[in-house]
Structures are given as structure tokens and as C-alpha cells.
Amino acid sequence: MSQPVVTRFAPSPTGYLHIGGARTALFNWLYARGRGGKFLLRIEDTDRERSTPEATDAILKGMAWLGLDHDGDVISQFERADRHAEVAHQLLAEGKAYKCFATQDEIAAFREAAKAEGKSTLYRSPWRNASADTHPDAPYVVRIKAPQSGTTVIRDEVQGEVSIKNEQLDDMVLLRSDGTPVYMLAVVVDDHDMGVTHVIRGDDHLNNAARQMVIYEAMGWPVPVYAHIPLIFGSDGKKLSKRHGATGAEEYQAMGYPSAGMRNYLARLGWSHGDDEFFTDAQAREWFDLGGIGKSPARFDFKKLENICGQHIAITEDSEIMREVAGYLDAAGEPALSEGQAKALEGALYCLKGSARTYPQLIEKARFALASRPLDRDEKAEKALNSVSQGILNELTPQLQNASWTREDLEAVLNDFAAAQDTKFGKLAGPLRAVLSGRAVTPSVFDMMIILGREETLARLKDVTG
Image 1 (cartoon, rainbow, N blue to C red):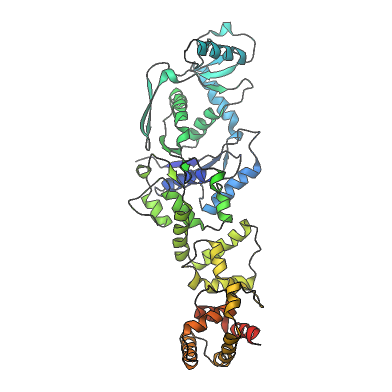
Image 2: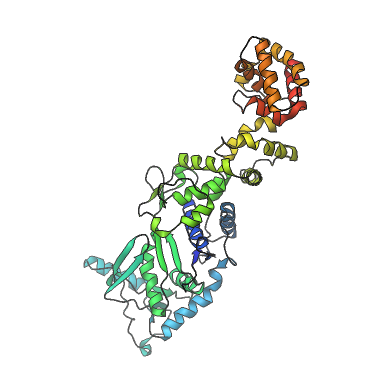
């Protein structure tokens, strides 16, 4: 029986959840969830100067918004420092690591001399094979004994076979002179202890894999399956940064993108399933595999993101849209909808959600239902309400008072009225839009009347006609 899949996402809490990190988390989540495996979350908070609780909170919030649920408790790397040190001491006891008493000045002098002679500046410690009775009573670091000949081969599911000559590997420090473990050791010990079977991470970690494999081999632990994924670039082909716009997951929530659309777009950013651009979560979980990940950096395209988000809003359940709209307003620092506004918006979704690509667009389209009388009118709406159109609307009001408030009946009343006025319905629609919404561009007049109801529709007409 094959071993259950275990993946992990291991961000450093030094800032928000970067969109590149969000995609890494998504790939790990999809791979595990699609195989009935586990998706674990580890916070790599060993850098005490830069790690903050606020950053951890921002990462958790970003993942919650993206719907990336993890199994078990969040693991703190810092809290496992004793276990990391224990492994280093085990390697020391087994002769697979050694105490190095070289000072920073000695190492710097070695590198300067090597550089002057045109030799490799990779530090070779004279303490590697020194016997314990020659050890001074002085501070030391613990270094692993890396192989000095042969080749280390990383069998990567994305990058293929990557070979690194062992003569290029240094005897990496495991414990600093104050006894604290380094990040590279902590990662390996944590991944092993957590039972991680697949390490899916950015290809900026590819070189780390060879050094980490030295620890796996020394401990006799199975090496996980590696998949190093390309970075995300901006539209200009440069690494995604602030100059390209939003880079944090929470920023996208505050801009009003739906989480399902964001998941879909991020999944397509560097991974493909045939020509499929739009797909559901269920399809993504079923289809996602490591073989579909490309080697080249993906380019972030806001137009594609909006297009996919619009398709997701169109198929999302109304109750879920309402939940996400509330989250968007909160993230954007906007006032929450009142109970009446929420009810009006939900009632209007049937005719709005097919044409909005973001939640701000949706709310703008629903403005007619959310606004209170008297309405503010834009310039085009004001122009549509001249004295002639006001007179026509005045005559229309009694006709509407007696209409049964169904779409079919309203269409009949308005079309008959337009014919009696010897005009086309289109000529009537402009002033009606202005009256009902204060805008020249709106949903259908009939939809607005149905959503607003008889009483509110007539009240808005009265505001204009007196």
C-alpha cells in the first residue's frame, strides 16, 4: 500500500502572505486534497528579529480567505529548536558532524587568500578530522560532514534531474556558536518529523535541496519528493513586486476579487490542464498534478484574473456571494451593509452577478437597490430628466399604480404607454433609469422595478415629478 501524501506550506512570518506564497500553498493544498492526503502548516519563525505575531496573523487570514484549510495545529518552528539541536548532537556523536573552532576572522582570511589565488572560496575547515584532544576551550559551531566527491542528484518533478558536484557543497553549519540551530537543519528535521512526503516550493529553494539532502542521507531518512516551481513575474517579465500593484493576498480581498476566482487564476499560473482556463475547485483537486507544472516563470495578468473572477461570480451561490461581499467590505475598510441593504442586494443578485467581475463592480451595479431617497444623480442622468421627460413620467405614474407587479405586466404597461405616446420604449427607458437609479447605465428597467417594489418605484417617480 502506498504511503499517504503529506504536503506542507512553511511561510516565514515577516510580512503579509505574498501572492507567490499563496500559490505555493494552493499547489500543496490541491496536491494533498486531490489524493486524500494531509496539508500541514508550519510557521518558520526562527528569525526572531523579523518574525512578528501580526505577520503570522496576516498569513492565517490570507489562507482563510483563499479557503486553504490545513490539517492539525499550526506548527511553530522556533518552538521545536530543542529537537533540531538534538539531531545535530546525534550527528556529532555518530561522527557525521564535527565541532569547528574557526573564528569569523579566520574564515574571512581563508576566503581572501583563496580569492587572491583564484581558487574556490568554499570554506574547508581544518577541524573536520581533528581529534577531540586537540579541541581548545573556545566557542565552536557544529558543521555537517558533506561528501567531498561524487555527485548529488535532485530528482525534481518539475525541474527534472539536477546534478550538483559534491565538491561544490560546503560543510554546512548546523548549530551556531550559541547552540541555536540554523534554518536549513530545522527545515529537514521538521519535514521528517511531520511525515512530509512531497516538498512543493519555489525554485529559489532548489540549491537548498542538495544541502538539505546531505542531512537526510546522514540521518538515514527518506528524501521527500521535490517539486520546485518557477516564480511569478509581473507583466513586464520581472519578479513580481510592489511596482506591479498588489502583492499580498489580503490586498486582493480588499480589491474585491472573489476567492474562488483567485484560486482558479493562481492554479493556472504556472500549471495547466490542457487548454482549460476556467474550472471549479472540485475539478482543480481532481486534475492537479506535478507533471502539469511548467518550468518557466508565469506572468501575472490582471485582465485574465478579472475575466476568470467574473465567471466565478456568475456561478457562485447567492449566500456565498453575500458572505464574500461582507468580507470584502471589512477588508477594504468600508461600512458594512445594513440589514435592509443586504436583503436588497441579495434580491438583486439574479440580474447582476452575470456581469460583474469584482465585488466593487457588483456593488456599483446594485447601487440603485442600496441607495436611499432622495437619489444623487450623475450628469447623464440629470440630462435625461428634462421637462418633456418629466411630463411623460408624470403621466406614467397612474398607469403603474394600477399594474400588477409582475415583469410580464410591467412590460405590457410600459410598452403600451410608449405606443400611446407615439414613441419607442427606448426613449422612455433613459428617464426611467435616471429616476430609479440616478445613473444612465443600469440593469434592466424592469429588473429594477421588480427589485425595488411598487411602493419604492412610485416614491422615486414622485421625487422627480412632484
